[in-house]
Image (cartoon, rainbow, N blue to C red):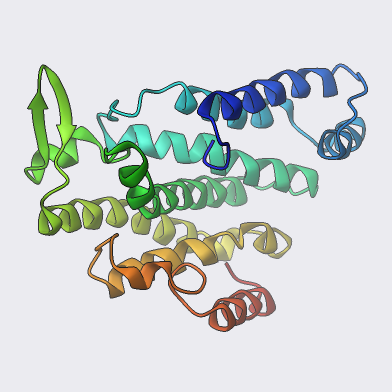
Length: 247
């Protein structure tokens, strides 16, 4: 949605993928390189239609949401993270032939944390585009004095930097809790699953970068390099975790 010049075009692309997934699993030919790669996986029973559909449909639901619509609870954002991020990890584990309850549980937590971290990182973008903080749950906004009622509709104030930082800290703490739960499972996760779970690394980088700027999403340092750190340092972290067989 964010790379489309018109939101309607972005939605059309998502709807096309929703239909394409149905065609792929009905053995219908689609002239699209990514769809053909997925069809190849599906023909080997290495792609799960449920996870792919769930990921696309969650994004379609989000795309149809009005910019002023505010999620009510953190659980809604966690569910969005699982539906859009964890499902991709589930699919990759399955395509790799890895059957492990521990790996699935770790993927669930990493996906939720990754989804939350990316939504937090995107707050300035959505604020500049829609003049709204679209992804701060109402329950957290109200707790920190950010929720106001304008003409019968709830909105989140954009004029209180300190309270915004407190709200972001609370959201980031939920993401960090998921990261800790995922890492607590590391000893029971098969070693061959660890590379699939490497998205935990950029998620932790985002959370660490937020911590360094006291959870001020408007701090310009967050826009530097890769996720707020130098590209070299980011690559070294990925290589280190990959070499150590960790996530």
